[in-house]
Image (cartoon, rainbow, N blue to C red; front, side, top):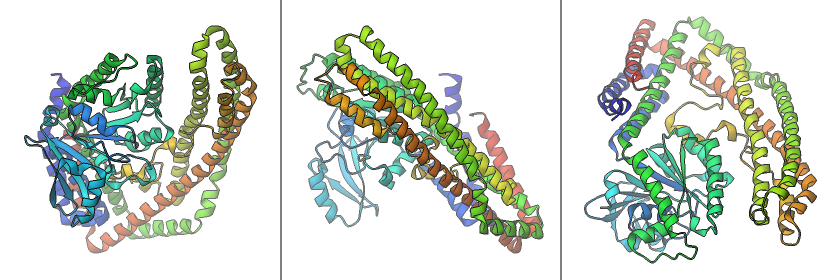
Length: 581
């Protein structure tokens, strides 16, 4: 075992000691009064989440859109039929699958009541009827089985994520409390824009050490070249979003059939290939997740503790700094904030021209890039006639063309969104200074997207800088009409000739789409600035009001002592965890 692994395995006592110290702060009623009910409520959520992470079984959550074969993948991993697959449109309940010598299934209701289920009850039609008769709302299905792998991990099968805006809170909670994630995509519709957005907005902020992206249904592909192309495409997209993702192409149904001894149709002669690819995934799962599960869990608990310490320390520093001001100074700042709030529109308007100018410059830069890109693309199209075989051109040229244009389009927006978010953060700091709250706002753990830093809120906030404009992960819609025209003529005319005939249309429509995207970027950026400014105002106003109330209820000397003692506890706790950084 490496020194690093040994360090993490020996961390449990330090974690116990640090969590105990933080709980001690929560038991200090005067300190909680000083920090405020809302903030201490947040701390209790942190503590509960950390306890849950430490005590519950290691949780591997399986996610993916509808009809991606998540349940079949789970059954293939387990080597038996456990996760229900014969439901429509697929799994519609949370299924928690864990170890027991005696297999069984129970419906767990919101009130804690458990109702025994038969295997036949797990199909959607029967389960829906049963749910209507339950005395309370169904929370999840608790499935127990004696599959060997369940001795090491619990697997959570989730409903399809067809609507990200309406992502069920229950799925969010399981995701927040997951130790590792498998995301199932489909080779038939490889890694849609909404799937990429989900990874970026819901999974990336949670900082999982390991993520598996399984491209299922590769048995639907006609050639190994087609499989390789799809896997490469998904890998490239994942690399841009989550560099620590492991991408595998698998056939869940073939592996499931193999493990339970069913007939495996092998019309294409790829049976051994499917088996090998699934074995590679299983070996990686064992090596990177199962054998490392204690280390992964410890890392995530340490991350949560460090964030809790940071959050609490920021709150204490802010209140302590305000205490150093006399009542008149607090009144002056409060009045200044209220005056600025009354002229919020003019304060924002003074900053907006800079954003508008920056976006105009970015759009011009993007147009120059795209003109250069299309010039090079034309050369590549002409060259492909001499370098590629007719078979390769027929099979791959169209998708190559679409992918290249889409990639260039997204690249422009991704780069500029990153640049724009830096500008917005800088303007936010300038606005805070204008309000006279720059010293306070810097301690409030408010990020450039206007959201407070809180692990349990990350999923529901779904904030991602690169995707905040709503266009950076999309394809140029106007250009698609030109591509469809190429596809319609593909069988009648040489596809390269057709592409060249439509070349100007593709370029012009893409640039038109790009212009619309930057217009949308402009609107979103201005809304972000409004939100950031208002958040700073609200946080500072609430903090000031709270400090004034505390100064009336608790003497300054007593408040100072409580805060200093708490800061000392946090400093010691942070020092204890520093060795694991």
